[in-house]
Amino acid sequence: MTRLWKLSGCTSRLLFSKYRLFSSVAEEVRDRLEYDLVIVGAGPAGLSAAIRFKQKCLESNVDLGVCVLEKGSEVGAHILSGNVFEPRSLKELLPDYEKRNAPLHTPAKRDEFYVLTQARAFRLPTPPQMHNKGNYVISLSELTRWLASEAEQLGVEIYPGFAAKSAVYDSKGKVCGVVTNDFGIAKDGNKKPSFQPGVEVRGKVTLLAEGCRGSISKEIMKRFGLQSNCDPQSYALGIKEVWRVPEEKHQAGLVVHTVGWPLDSRTYGGSFIYHMSESRIALGLVVSLDYENPYLSPYQELQKFKTHPKISKMLEGGEVIQYGARSLNEGGFQSIPKLAFPGGALIGCSAGFLNVPKIKGTHTAMKSGMLAAESAFEYLNGSKQYSEGEVELESYEHTLRNSWVYDELSRERNIRPGFRLGLLGGLTNAAIETYVFRGKSFWTLHLPYEANESLKPASSAKKIAYPKPDGKLTFDILTSVALSGTNHDHDQPPHLKVKDSKIVEEVNWRLYAGPESRYCPARVYEYVEDESGQPKLQINAQNCLHCKACDIKDPKQNIQWTVPEGGGGPKYTIM
Image (cartoon, rainbow, N blue to C red):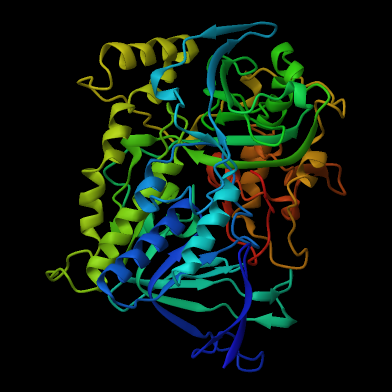
């Protein structure tokens, strides 16, 4: 018997397995765990899939094993979202969620929508898809911890602190599980005394719920050509702060969205201000990563945003208590890839079901996980006969395309691409799509290029001067990073890999003036002078928030984000 400490926000207990999880240093044998269903990622999609799968097992009185791997130190540690939560999928999954004390404490009470200029705020009618009656202002990291406790009560095994680094394939090329990262490798590549090889976690079905730009999902999509018949995915970077404000400034349930200033008219994005429980305000800025100006800093744009008279008044007398950032999918309907592959499927933001105009994706992610779980159970329980060469979860693809998820995303499909026309053109197009055609227009607009292709050379771009932080309303980036709780063992191989240093020098620095030093919301990348006085890229991997912006925005895709040792990264609790 080999011991595995299982640590999560819900439980901490010593487990025993008939498989040896870790071998001794001398043997260096990669051990194997076997399950019926392996899920990578303990977010809303992954946990909903696990719960639904176990519900199906109970309904049919069969015992099938489910394992959920999570790279964060505990469930919820890497979860960040706005979040105004639509409970539609939760009602389907756990109809008695209120009796189970789901952390939905603050009903959304009022919606406000503004266009900002530098000094003024013009209120517009809130678009119908942004109405939030019946929804809740929540912390998504809190909700995922609660979902994890519900899953464990059904017998799901959840392993936080185990980062899946790559897929495992059988002799026919079918996915049959994943391998977790090794522990105890030094920065120089040598094995430390604490070395333990990663574990091969085998599954008859593997569901990838890694979130936006997941590293294994990226590998799988390329290997099986899952994006060959859809638009390229488009992305944005969301940067968020949680404030505690004086009680007289707080209006529990108030939901505010803005567009316009501080972003220029060619850069798609907007802000959110959500009044949570306990005198807390969740505030953030989302900036599309197809922006053009290499001098733009999404982090600094958020700091600038807070200086607007309307916003600064809300925050007066308050303090920031947590900070974080995360990339998100913006492609919507046109960018949904093929979902099923031999041995598994993509669910949640690994596939990309965010409804951008609605500013919601948790409900669609959860539903995708539930549908995939039902398809996986159908396959594993032998209730359907499969022909030779048929992909196991093909029925998931079919049921999702006939679900309310597909219909909802289809209705909103032309709104985000319309902002290629700029802010005014985008708002006009959105109004026509919403009020005239009601989501049933006869055409489909597209975003046919990748985010890394949009930058203009620095020589033709306008430099942006950002004000110095005052330490009360605006902050330097390292002060904010400290509030994320992020941490990585310094003595491990860098998980941010630069493929060719010459490209950094000749393209990133000379052509684009080092944009990674500005788009990164944690100062992972900075240019310092080498011994000859020339700029050299320095990577501060310990700061990384796992937002994946570098993997998306780097002009030549020369920077690759990979998983570090499990347990590293941010430690979000209320994001």
